[in-house]
Image (cartoon, rainbow, N blue to C red):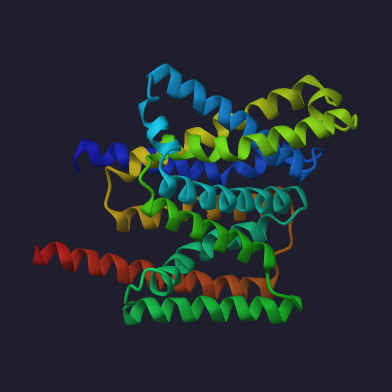
Length: 297
């Protein structure tokens, strides 16, 4: 295997592993309300990304982006979706719903496929339709067992699929895109933090040094996996990238069950099993199609 591909596999795997270990970070900040934690994540990410851009002197794109209505509309929409995704994920982790959050990222690839058909007009193959139907059956089973749909998982999956769809067609790269998104969300985040400070409810000033440093770390913790992912995605086939993405939710699920003692009984296992079977079908079908296309080429 070429060294360039090996480097890509390592970079993408590290990115997904970082995302999979996120519950450890957010659990350490469980005392901070989710909305305040989201505001800190946006603010420190903006500062960290700005420092990276300054160090690399990559500012030339910003003026053109701010004058391009299409870029602004796209970034405004992706900013809203990533903020929704981050909020629900933070809420899930800090409210002992890590297993349900992992479910959201397990079904995300299949929501992507569904969006491709409904929004982009792509024609799905029979294997893809079967995978989507099997995943839907798993979600339906979980709904019946719990007495309500897994709203957190669905919100995470749909918001991230929508974000991915917008980023797929966005003209900005990973670092520039994150810079624009945090730049748009930054004023709101700073307003929230300022209001909390005025009310005497700011965790940054009312907590110890450990909490303060963990909040500051939200910047690199957010940006570094994204940059690793962007670098790795350019070096490896898309089908292989699709398989590696299951590292993240698998680690989250294991943390939720083995470390944080969240329930995972037989009824939930059946629902997850149907979704895992759907992912296996989707992955095998994608690999087969990829190899067939490579052989034809």
